[in-house]
Image (tube, rainbow, N blue to C red; front, side, top):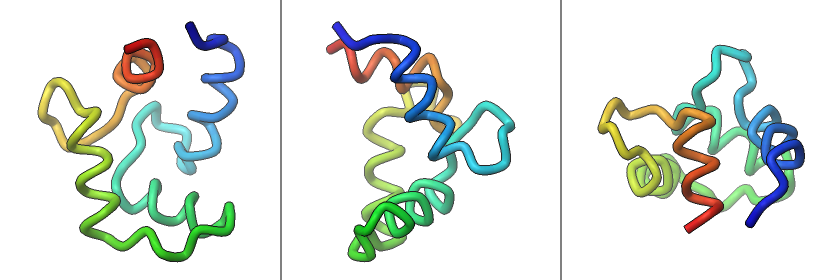
Length: 70
């Protein structure tokens, strides 16, 4: 099981605008900032879609947390 405080910190690095959701664009930008410039738009879309359980196109903290605890 993941540590929830570490998960919140990590989620915050991706949630650039602080609205509580990570978009594919935010994911792509955060990955580039962390040194992975090879995450393309379609890859970011696929990663978010794989974890987006309610289908709104956004990754909430609850969805992120659930994906860490699978």
